[in-house]
Image (cartoon, rainbow over all chains, first blue to last red; front, side, top):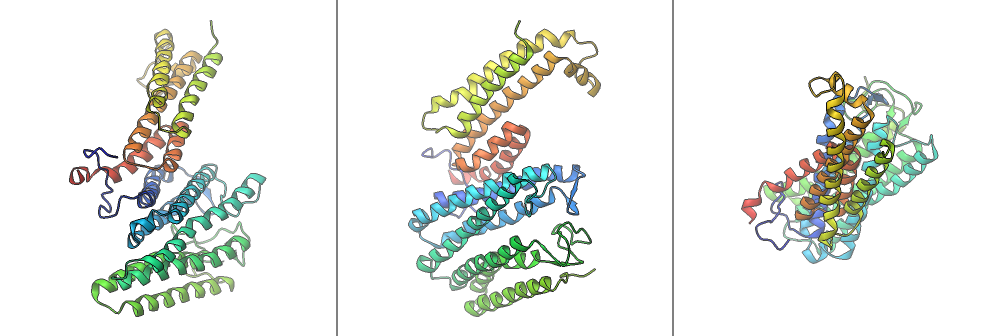
Amino acid sequence: MSDTMFQPRMPLLPQLDDDLVTRLLLALGLFMVASFVVFIPAWLLDPRILDGANVWTKPQKFNVSLALHFFTLAILAQQVPRATRSGWIMVGFAYAAALSLMLEFVWISIQAGRARRSHFNFETPMEASMYALMGLGAFLLIAVAFVLAIQIWRKGDRSRPGLRWGSILGLSLGFATSLVFANYLSAHGRYVGGDPDYVGAVLPFFGWSREIGDLRPAHFVSLHLMQTLPLAGYLADRMNWPAIPVVLGLAIVQVGIAIALFLQALAGQPMWPV
Amino acid sequence: MTSPEQIFGWAGQAAMIGWLILIFLPRRWPQLLWLPRFIIPFGLSLLYAGLAMAHFFTIEGGGYGSLDEVAALLGNREMLLAGWVHYLAFDLFVGGWIAVEADKVGLSRVIQAPILVATFMFGPVGLALFLAMRAGYFRKQEAAS
């Protein structure tokens, strides 16, 4: 807007640049937060249960996770020059992620309202094809992170090595490991050693089984490399810790935990037995 | 005398035109927004006024005082239609407000679309979504200008 009286700023992060991609990524995060707030009453008032949890727990987990994802991307994108950020690669992948998010958000919310599964649901042709389409959407949602990692590696600010390497490693490792784990998850279902309709003791909110092998904890730990490594690198810069060992050490530990959780689930064991 | 079903159809089509403009058409021509923002809501409001004034006072036990009174009001087909037209008019007007405010803060049409669809389908859900989002934008406005 050219009107100087009306300069919208995001109070959450007023120091961020006001370019197209930053604005889009921030607004997506904000949209997820707003959705979380708006679904709270339904969460409280709706007594319906699906897979052992309130029907609205699924969209709420999705809202929290993707709010975190897009806020992270908006912040980390500040490391590349504005020209790179506003170039067609970043704009293209940011819009692809935005469209994917909208598709997934709408479908997950509708299915929650109908008390039907949005994932692992092949009961009707529509639900099966939406599940396939969501696979592509999920790929595009995290592909933008990998593309950003490449841009930071090529053109990013080199004055803060912790943040720089935390971002590059976190975004690319988070992307790669998520591809592996999520791919396995979508091909084999979330449970190992139990039928897909199994309902037993679960972790609150997360809904991970405490009785049988559950592949989702590994996916969770690996996906959030995208947040933990940049944060560790940022702290290393601030505290004058050796940046590379801190980031690399945490990366090895966290990927190790994710692999351990994955193997544990494959062995049919719950991560936190009752 | 036009049947309530016929009026229901026309009102729905008028609202639909407004929503299509808000959600899909470009914002390059501001005059185009007059239709969903003012002209269609005004027409629907006039229709509501006619229906409500003609029937509200004639319904036995109808009123706004209790849920039973409201149920009696809406038990009448003309009043039920009036109530529906009320939804159509106000939801569209709110949708127009959301679109204009969202454009002002530079909110992408990709994100506007689901908010507007939510307003179209479940009025207050879309409004609450947008109000919650807008709370994230405006607090630092003075500092920035």
